[in-house]
Length: 239
Image (cartoon, rainbow, N blue to C red; front, side, top):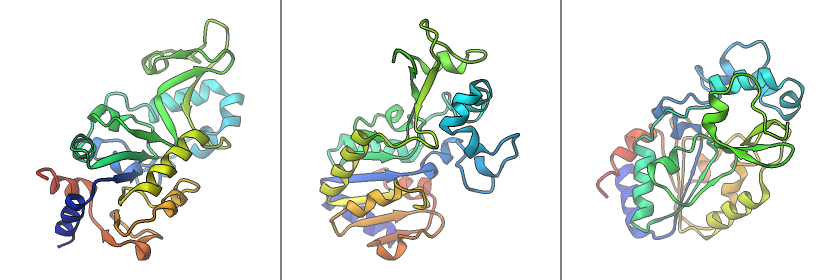
């Protein structure tokens, strides 16, 4: 019944926005942050939230990059059914934008064109001194701290703790959400701000929440599905 309602709403809508979190990519083999097996529940010499902070990056870049390469650069992973169905919905003209908290680039890998990466991407890196860029592969397979020819350190274009979100990206994402006639939120606990607060800008009456566990926004949604994204989006494959 819930899946049928979702299918009908998608067929009726022509300006859909998808807002996704770590749960979108877990079925591609990328661990999330807060689950039992997530990044924050593993043991390291330092707390992961400390390691991926701007101050730690500046104080101990060598340790930062050891951790980052091992735990946060899933370059070899492939899109799953959720990424693929979303890309197909965009191709059909139904989906106008994906707003993602993920940094893995799997939406683009699946074929999505309009993707707002509010926490950045592992696929982009820039020199902290001159602004030059380098590839993700250069960072991934470099031994030690990757440096530019000018001597500056290449920093991944991801939002670290103690850093603000990119204002231009946030504004574009908020504008897309505000114009949407349907907002599908999936794979996120909706507890991380300011990202979670972005869905408050939705003005429509088709707010869909898809997540295994309850979220603080469940009572505000027009449709709630407590199931895996893979299961839900597999049922949408033949739209």
